[in-house]
Length: 71
Image 1 (tube, rainbow, N blue to C red):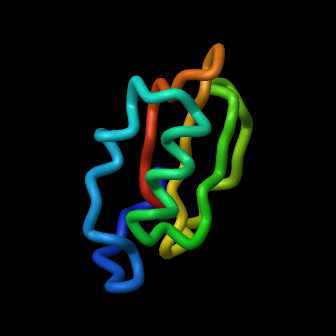
Image 2 (image 1 turned 135 degrees about the vertical axis):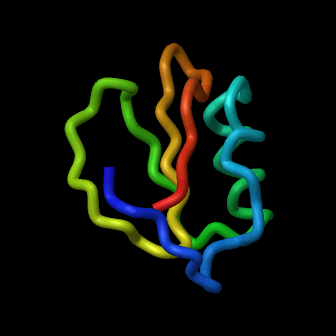
């Protein structure tokens, strides 16, 4: 996994707080917390590992967030 930076552009928010939420609720809350980009993915999606400041990634299975991480 790509290293996580302490970028000042990322909200001071714990990604773990989104796990267990419905995907639409998680996305709404993330935007309210200041995330500029919220990316929803399948848990087994193949993605590039670039870090994008201000982005929150949500792995969603059956409409529920099962994992969440910055970048």
